[in-house]
Length: 167
Image (cartoon, rainbow, N blue to C red):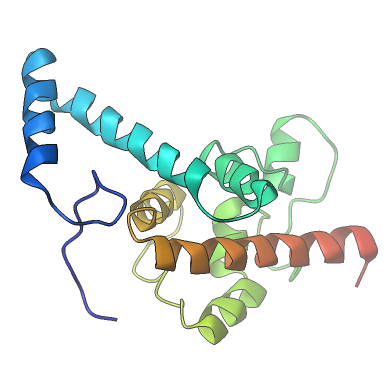
């Protein structure tokens, strides 16, 4: 996959002078604070998510990932639920979202097989927020986003199948 420039303020990733003008006006109205513009772009990404052509359950799933509320064992332990901390698929490391989606051998195999093995590469451990930013950038590339979300959903469903069905 070759690199390309993406303008994150549009759904198709193409820069427009009109949108840049709106950014400049917004920046001026906010007293020159880029943080407000960044938050506007963040809201635009959420609009793209809710308008994406994927099932509502997958939209909610992505929302849960970004809000870090998927019920992994790490999240359950934080809520004082008595569970084993290991990944319930491979039993190798803690069951965190980062491990489940980026480092678990089962997830790695699915990512490799799908051709999306680059998603977690180059990210050191304990950098799930960087992965989330990378995922948010994919919203500007609808075709790639629509390939990644079902894959993450599949990893999550496979994990739950092992946990709840014992298979």
